[in-house]
Amino acid sequence: MHNVALQALGLDWVYVPFEVAPENAGAAVESIRALGLIGVNVTVPLKELVLPYLDAIDDAAAQIGSVNTIHHENGRLTGYSTDGAGFLQSLESAGQAVSGREVYVLGAGGSARAVAWAMASRGSRCRIANRTQAKSEALAASINQVYPGKASAALWGAETEPFDLLVNTTTLGMQPHIGERPMLPPGAFSDKPFVCDLIYAPAQTRLLASAEAAGCRTMNGVGMLVYQGAISLSLWTGRPLSEMPTAAMEQAVWAGLSNP
Ligand code: NAP
Image (cartoon, rainbow, N blue to C red; front, side, top):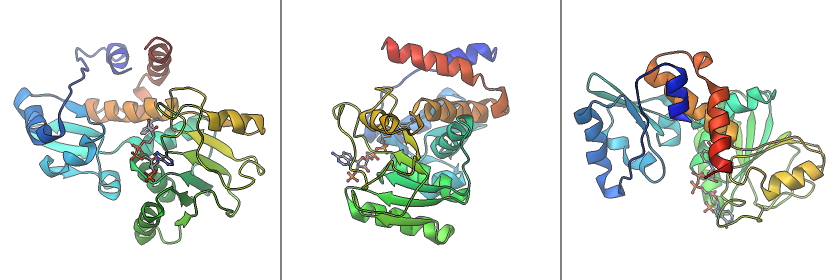
């Protein structure tokens, strides 16, 4: 996805994977400066471990306590979290509003934090249900400190107020949980919410299949994947998001998924 984008942008850059052991997080971040890299993405479990080695982080990263993007400018390293903004962009590109929504978020891990903070920042209200309830309560409490009344913890699988957007951020539905589905509140699909699953492999999870069978419109995680990457590229290149070749990036993702 990234190399297709770099080529389309006419940049003589290359995007390569590095496998970094958690105990090497600090050394890996220092090497960005030493090697003169423009930037990196980081994934689990490095998203939190790299924080102490950065010079600055953006608001989204501070709110959710992790980064997925580092930008290097003249020896200074800034961390960003583009997952939440990527999710918002993917919703908008599916013709969905991001403001004023009643959202039911399944999960309270890293991606749930990104989604719930991003939706609350646009004035939507999130009810967060997680298997481990203490985590959904902690997430709702932290959001409410900044956006009062915009988040609450819901009981996993229990009756809840109506919602018009359902987002699965749990790993239920992907390897090794293919064929599984998170616990839903009773009548979850009766108001025909727009149903999102952040999972992109498989392209259609059991949750999305059930939602479609119940007449709901759905979206998988490919759009979020593409847009969080496009936002990172926009940060590294200093060019606007609208110039990022998201259609070509999405095509590259689908090609990779069908031929892993
Ligand atoms: P994470 O921080 O590890 O959180 C995992 C979540 O799944 C937690 O809420 C956890 O609940 C829940 N969970 C795990 N196993 C469960 C089970 N057996 N029953 C019920 N709940 C269970 O992971 P993450 O980083 O948020 O990623 C979660 C998913 O989002 C992954 O599928 C990932 O691929 C996807 N994702 C997609 C994108 C994208 O761009 N499309 C970006 C980021 C993530 P507990 O708290 O109870 O353990």
